[in-house]
Image (cartoon, rainbow, N blue to C red; front, side, top):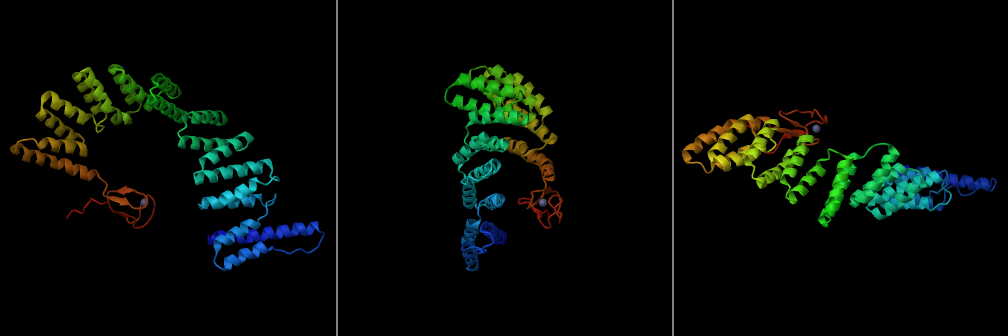
Length: 389
Ligand SMILES: [Zn+2]
């Protein structure tokens, strides 16, 4: 607040002086009061420690003309950035109401006011302004980007698509990711309303925009499974994982269900072995352990889990192993728990014990200065990582 006043005080004084000078010029040398009563009212508020009223008084005395439009824009922008959106809105509305603005100045003021409305959460008003701005053919890119943000927030995917198309042709940059997701959203909405064939059309469009769209592929697989085409669903899910292996844990549960519907447990086993070799730790090991328990019994599953733990220990594998152990006879149990010890040790060794409270940087040892954000004494031991005595 204080720095704002320091900025406003000279600006307001200068504006008063400019106005005085202009009217003095008009009246050919006749001396007019240099700074008006509003300025002194502002100063008075300031002296009475009423900075809010002082700011309003100074803003009020800033005359809008070609010399001060930039000042108004800068002030409004400043207010918005400081979170004082109401003031920013007042300044920008005041600007727009002036007929003397040039086309460019008016467009700039529209853009600013639109951003004020966005900040205030008044999306309807912001939308109208950005549409108007778009029609002026000035700041079209900014208007479209803001419209896109509004339509995404309102989940109006059809409108989002239209704006994305306009942005693409304006900037020449493709918006493949966004557009494929808009089509997926439209597909889900259609499906929720029972319009299955329209949903299919939207999914095809999503894949037409982005052949490798994981979400669209996943949805297609779900649609196929619902219609009883488990083979087709499996084929699509496999493709999805081939396109982007990071999504394996997302699609694995459905893969299992589809194989079980087909009754192809042997084929499932082969597939799980294949992906656990290619992607250890993505969940195939647990699924395979469950399958082994079903087909060959609990001890085969336990042996398999122990081997996987030795290969790549993880908390989920450990938990599953302990659960299986709970049903073992006591004689085996002690040995089993003993065999888990090195795996737990390895898991602990892999965990970073220290973390920067400022930037989140993880470390295995105490650094007095964070190597990432360079702050001092921000790195401390993480909760749950007790000191070993
Ligand atoms: Zn840091």
